[in-house]
Length: 414
Image (cartoon, rainbow, N blue to C red; front, side):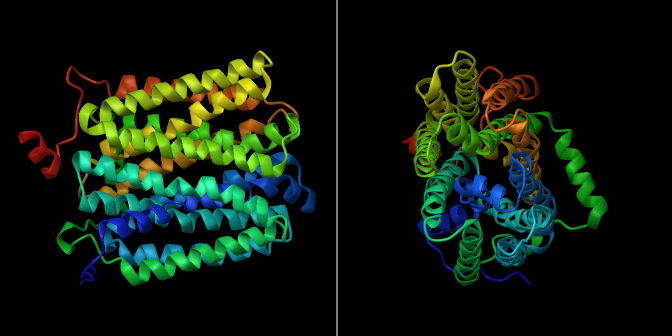
């Protein structure tokens, strides 16, 4: 029998679900300032160190394929608690890894565990909201989750003054433990018994097959995934490009990284303010265009040798576009799948992290002394995302919009 939901305010729910959505950026961003020193400590080449980001993304992707359908069958609360507990344990194992190869394995497990928080948080939003209100709620999650890429590298850079990269993973374990306690204490079940969808592996595969055949769903999913992959390429390549190529210190790198994360937060709130007027489809199209312009700007800056003066603004524009793309793509993709929101959320998430995992190591194929591979990938992926959106989910006259939530409908009638 489902556990009765505990009373929880809108603000507390936003903070908690936003925090649960940070497992991705926390896992990838906090130890970024220590990535070069970790490679030296474990006697690993740059490409192997960057693979710790790739394996984390693979875990975050594959874990969603498991946690999403399980939450459709068993409810949201129990799988979420299990995933957060496993994340804390896996973070401690990462801190104790004696070799780069064991660290890669532990990072995979850490990512798979953290995936439960990400995928189930999105499904909970779909349980509670729809239409424009869902798009606005997702934008608020981006605002809260956006603090992670701002604070994580800053905290990581400061932690390196008092500990090494292993200490950073101990801190991640502590974050997981705190979120486990908060989830257990205040989050009730949001999926009623009658809305649960079981049936085992065959039924789950049928659900995924139906989602893959849904052209608009895949258009929204791929446009978001390819934009996210461009950001993942930036996450993987920027520590080496900015520190090794341009001579930026680890602390200044953290400030630059945080500034770009602020751009994501600001863009998400611009989207939240405008989505009621223009609709999620138009906002998604605008976000993908912004990412395309920024990615092409990165490539031009590197090829033309414009230095940090040309590179940093282009990185800011490209990364900021994520704040528009992710909330609107999520609202559009999940809108028509209320009974299988966990599975739809899983496919949405796995596309983002799988494409990110494939793209991230490409930033380092030329070594740590060139920015060209990162620039090429960051320019190509948003263009591909724009093409997927146009081909698979073309906007008809009066673009496909989500149904208005009750509050918005009443406001417009007034």
